Amino acid sequence: MTSTPRIQPVNPPFSDALQSSFDIVMPAGIPPLNIFKTVGNNERVLSRMVRGGLLDRGSVSIAQRELVILRACANCKAEYEWGVHVVGFAEKAGFSEAQIAATCDKALDDNLWSDEQLALLQLVDELHETAQLGEDIWAKLRTHFSEEQMIELIILAGLYHAVSFVVNGLRVENEAFAPRFPE
Image (cartoon, rainbow, N blue to C red; front, side, top):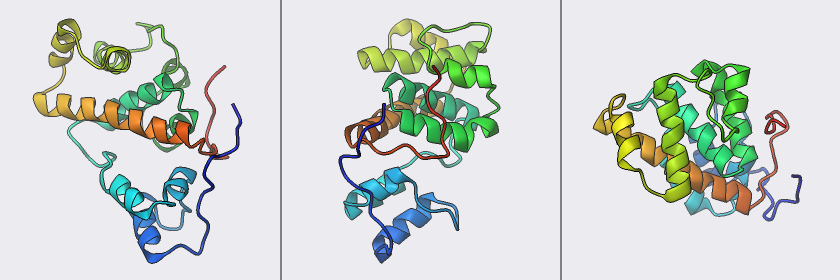
C-alpha cells in the first residue's frame, strides 16, 4: 500500500540534538532512515526512542532477536520496519529467502523452522493475538530460553508492536532499498 506520509521527515541541516540521536542508531556516513527523520519532528521522543532500543548485543542471538522482530512487524502489517530489518539483519541472522518470506505467513511450516524457532514464532503470535502467553507456550519456550532471555524476547515483541504503530500510524514512507512483503 502506497500512501502519503502523515508527517513529513525532517530535512538537513539537522539540529545538534537530532544529529546526536541519529549518530546513535546510524552507522557513520549513512543518512538517517525515514522513521528516525519522521520521529525527529519531536526531538525528545526521538532521543528516548534511540536510547531505548534492543539492537545491541543482548541475551538472545541475532537470529532469535530478528525472528521475533520480523514476525512482530509482519503481524502488525508494518512493511516499512519489516523491510528495513530484512535488509539490515536477515543475512547476518542466517535466514534463507524462504524463511524470510515465511515470517509473513500465518501458517507455520515445520520444515522451515527448528523447534526453538517455532516456539519464538508462537510466542510472537500469541502475544499479538491475546496479549498473554498460555502455559503450553510458556513451557515450550522455557525448554529453550532462560528467564533473562524470556524477558528480552517479550520486550522485543512489544517494542516492535510500538515501532509498527509508529510506522503505520504516521505512514512512514518505505525506504527505496528495502524489500516489500512477499505476495
